[in-house]
Image (spheres, rainbow, N blue to C red):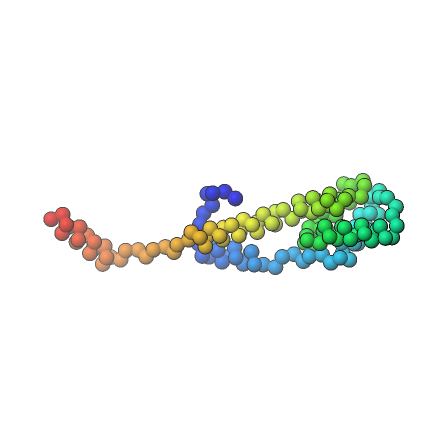
Amino acid sequence: MGKDLPTIGPKSAETLQQFVDAPRPPMPEREQVEVMIAKLSLATASQKRSQDEEAERLELYWLTLRIYPLVDLRSAFVKLLRTCKFMPTPAEIDSVVQDEGYDRRRRINRAKHLLMIHYRDYTPPQEYVTAEELAELRSKLQIGQG
């Protein structure tokens, strides 16, 4: 993230905190993942399996993909529909889904990093020297030189 990041002020920190605290995209429900897998299976070449094997297969896809936001899954499945000739494995789908959410995760992590720097390093600006204080300092300097 770079060592030259600035220390942000309170207003920027507040805005970034709101961004970090904002609701995340909804997570998928099992049925949504199953529908995507079924459609992908229809659109690609895949082996014939028994109902028990298919149920186990869906379980594997669900275990792999349930950790991703629904928006990332949908985007990945559109990509996969356009590019796959054969039914992808859970690991292959996982790789595509990770790419889909990368930018959002990167922005959130960068905001968290900037907030960490703010809380660690920020010090409020010091008050300026008043005219009276400046005059007093000058008089002390003149007394010391005289």
